Amino acid sequence: MMKKLLSYLRLIRVNQWVKNSFIFLPAFFSLKLTDTHVVLQLLVSFIGFSLIASSVYVFNDMLDVKEDRLHPVKRNRPLASGLVSTAEGIGLIGVLLAIGLSIFLFFIQDPLVLLIVLLYLVQNVLYTIKLKHISILDIVIIAVGFVLRIALGGLISDTVLSHWIILMTFVLALFLALAKRRDDVFNFVRTGVSPRKNLQGYNLEFLNVAITCMATVVVVCYVMYCTSEEVINRFGKNVYLTSFFVILGMLRYLQLTFVWLISGSPTAVLLKNRFLQVIILGWILSFFAIIYYNLKW
Image (cartoon, rainbow, N blue to C red; front, side, top):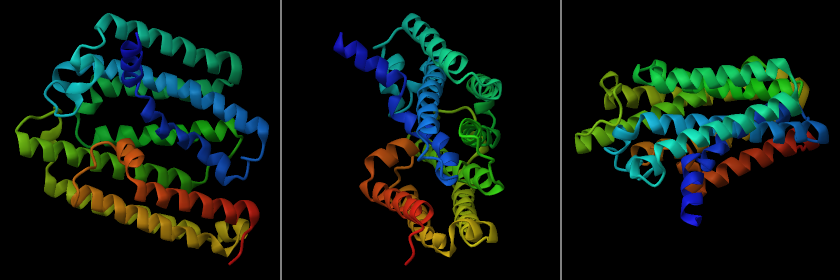
């Protein structure tokens, strides 16, 4: 019984829920994390959105069973390994969607929020069925998914999204998706087994350049954001100090990608790499201190 439960938890990829924390970013930057009602709404939405996202993961694994069995890591997934049957997977999708959508229908009760959730769901179903097999478009869809997360958080917290947060979220997501694709291509070069149909649209040379370009764009955009008149007028001139953590974070991820060759799953990298965790925690704490307590050095 316990083994089956653990298989279900692995199948819905609870560890991937950390990506949905982007929902909280608009409230964080708009100084609304001290509002109990907003935080409660965000927490409920986080759970609902995560359940819906998990239903897509299960659907994806059902369609990718044959390909996953050829992948050195993915072959251990519950469906690919046979720990969970296809029938159980279908039932699990129904339960996840029913609970997730009910949360937005009966607790959040905002038509625009529900529209974004449905848009995310439809986009990812299409991604799973077809779009993930089209190179470049596949990573763009992933990046748009992160933008939809912050759009959801903006609506729930009643925050107008700035062009900065939209742009940086999109570019950062592109960077992470490209790093993941590089891992797929590297494994293909090493083993001769392709886990994806769209890898012919990528090679290591292209991905190395693209990853480096996106890393540069992320850092430049963030520094421009920190030193913009809009941010200085609102939060003071010390926000630029948080850019050191962003630069360190990007350098660390580039090191993990090019030197240690462990960029397969951004979530796995984040959950396992202590140095990267310390950098992100430092960024959060420093930003929080500056914008919530107007801390000056």
